Image (cartoon, rainbow over all chains, first blue to last red; front, side):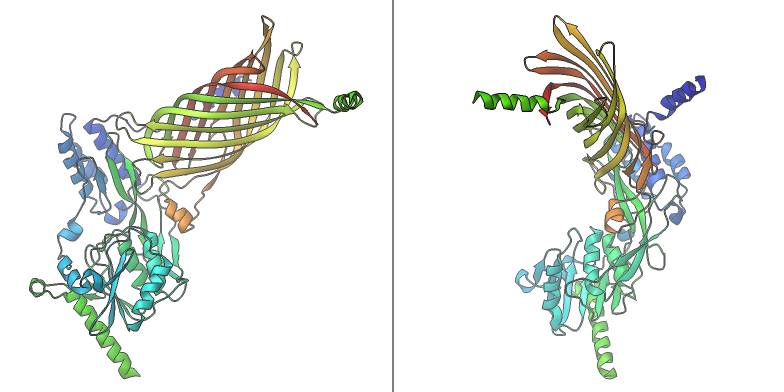
Length: 343
Length: 258
């Protein structure tokens, strides 16, 4: 009987309260520790990036004190997050949102609003359906689709209407330059219009615990063809360093397709599905939590190399020539001429 | 007409009569909510609840068995003291089962023990969640349940002290993995042990209701304390929702003719 009571007492004392031992102090040192620990336990690319997070702790803990200002703390914590080299890591406060931008700031822009305006023309010259703007480019009758963001999922109907409108064209250009991403479901919906059959487009993992290597097995991601209109003629995707996150995923989905070619600069990457949580002082922290992999089980966190690399030079900007777009049109022209000769 | 009424009276007397206790309680109190899927911090704040209890003799068991239904809706608006980050937390619980009753001390003390099947669903929404703003819950299980009710007569009126403790013993609950997104779960269909077996060692929980009821006209006023402790540690994630509430309501004893 005593043994039973003792066991019961131990159970009640040890098991009954489920709590977490994170400090709820809003002092700078506690905030620093909470941020470091949150990323330590939940960030997903430590092993891939071979980053020694312990040494990052040593370096930045020395810069934090409980007497420092909010601005100074934000600055130190932001710099600490930059060591992750990840555009999906943001420290969010009421005064600022930190963002790591070396993945695009250190490279050519390869895009401008002026060039886009020149391509699309005046408002009445092109059509707009949700996140897509499109028109037929003359004189070569090439379909041009501009997708600026993946913040909304286009309907099957609007995708179908667009592709029917562009069906007079022998090829299509999908411009994903400076598309910072949005919803993966939007990327899937668009990609489904360009595949013939159910296709393995990648894998996804998630963390099963706080260890840097505590990952689930990679689970396959399949893409089903659209139940609406499908485009199986040549497609050229335009990319630059700001093609990021869900837009990067769209490139992952479509690049292996035999009728798709990617032209431009390397994409920005961003292959970790982000999570958001809070710090005890009220700031938020967003970070990559679940890595996506290509069908060859490779990471694209640092971007995807295009099939044809092309930059817009300063001279081209001054002549208002979109070199990447022109490169795509040349490739289409050559491909169509080659196809004619074969016939 | 008199004959008809007499026949009706005889017919009614021949039918089995069943006493049904129906109690409705409103609760106000405090809640402490932790969900490490969303954030690792304990959120605390005011809570409200509505609980309905129905207890009646079962058709079987020779009068010693009662049937119970317990239906509860509860919610809390909880914040972290240092940051003001808010959770909206809520649960709906439906439970039903049976108790075996013992009447002691000339019927003044009733002790009952039994089991309840429980189905609970709910969610927690975090205002600052961004990519993962909410956590959903669905659980089913079996609770061990005990009741003690003591009737005491004060100035000719019958007062009742009552306590009920329900402890979930075994069940199954939905839980995402440590870092698994709902996109993976529900859009891609990547199942990863998301239906978990629960027992007192990984989900120690209880519902406690202690009340004092006193007669007021044709009803009984019920005052008391309601404690609802829901916890689990599953798939590397921890959750607790501790609700402590003062409850007030009314109870009516209805006679059903079967």
